[in-house]
Image (cartoon, rainbow, N blue to C red; front, side, top):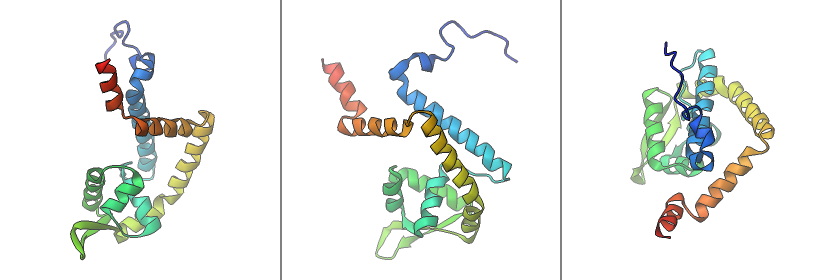
Length: 168
């Protein structure tokens, strides 16, 4: 066990860094939420990667979708969806086929095992959703702030802002 006291200034550096650490704060929150959700899945005896949720949920709601459709719906890159698809396929939860009209496109669908897992997890997902609404309300509508942050980045990316500041 490490009984050493942290050096002065290292304790919760991210909090004290303010707006400069927005990425670190978001990453920390995301990791915490994922870790706690993983604990809940484990309590059900389910090995589950949190990144699977969006893809599994969309496939359950809409049926087979292409990787491009999943990426668009989730607002993430095609590469990220492809990696998730590969992970889900290795776990036996999804399968994918080449689109007959365009072999570059892959259509992803739930397997029988995937459908069974989704059915088993729906009550947990509903509870997670309710807890998220409660947290958002308690935090003073944090989602609205995140939406404003995303819109601000859409207007001018971090890269554009930094480059402008460097040229000053």
